[in-house]
Length: 439
Image (cartoon, rainbow, N blue to C red; front, side, top):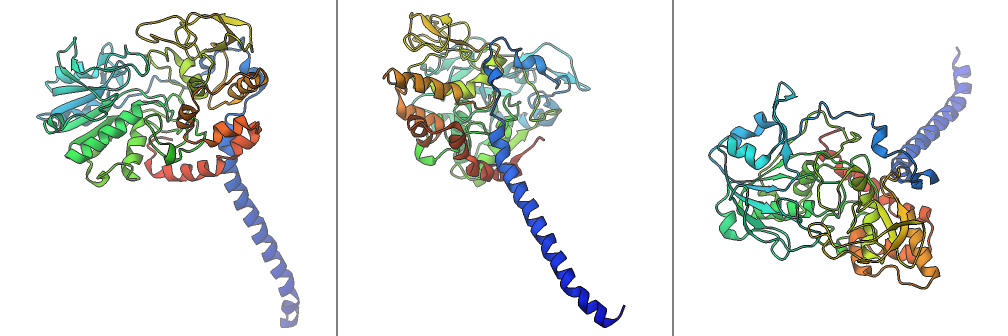
């Protein structure tokens, strides 16, 4: 090819290069957009999701827990480090585990405190979060310090006014272990108790160990990211309502992002699970609290918890809390139920002894964060000129912002409401990457 012919081809090559750059840029932009849109789509469900005749969600399980080994069950990794130490436990009724040999369970489930005592580990105190160390206290109910009736080990309350132990207890500990089943929502208070105990451990230079457990809502990342102006015990961290982390991953993030004072001097250890992934269907073997009695309640909890700030009942005081919804005056369904006093789960439930009409969600396929019921009920209450948000400040604490409540009150569309938090979700997804332990 002559030089003159090559010179004629140069403009054509330049145009090809420009076209290639435009295509590459558009592809990159689409990838970023997909990252943002993904979290929006995961909670948009067909209308059949509200059909109470639909099959239960867990009947469609394609994952198995047969190969799952909990952090607490990974005894060969952590037991030796506890010998000769003064140990404090943050535990409750969910702190159960199987003992394993060659990846097979060899005994019936045992509570962590009993396991450690069988290995002569010096457990000096148990710390009681919301619902108590045996899980028999209702939401918000006072938790007293004292002694555990089964083991006679001292119990120190970390729920209520005193969210951290007195110095006299911290000064006599070498390590604190957290082993409690979480449900993966920002407003479930076990992770707030973990935060405060990590803070105390850092201050007193006590080691902190998390025995990791599954997140039963682990495949979802959704909802507004908490604005620290609305920080409270039902929302401690700038994370979304559904954060997609295990308690171990969250503990790593709390330390790594310096969300506690003296984070750099906290000796944090996470004992990971084996055989776990975020989409694993995990039917909790023990209810995590009195009003989340089964898998269905745990899956509905992220969407129904906002009703706690409203005039509507979500079934506290019945045999199916967080699985029904209703009111005595505003009627959006024909299912009837009557809340009654239940000493351990709901001593004084909302709309006590009133016949309520609403929806039975015990077999619905609602999952993730679904705001349609909340918005439908608000609309119905507004049409009858009845106040819906009876505790607006509490609603804002649950949401981590006042923008969600105001958007609902202003009649904004579901699409616009969900779009409002997508940018913050994209930033959160990138922030969490260094702390992920599981696919």
